[in-house]
Length: 91
Image (tube, rainbow, N blue to C red; front, side):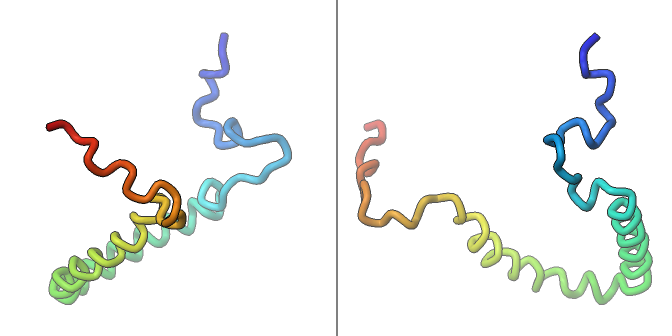
């Protein structure tokens, strides 16, 4: 038998001596559950206000995605290999 029988255990993927992330603890799961329930009731009561803010949230998402999604592109090394991949496309 392999270790695949214990797939539901959150401690399986932890290194020895490390603590689980907060959302995998009992308190974290309870907090997430209460937050989801609260969000449901708030949106249910204030659907008109939430739906009215949707275009502004969409516009706010554009600069936030630009800010967070360019994190791993390696823009720190401007002097190293600058432009070396230009002009290598198929003709």
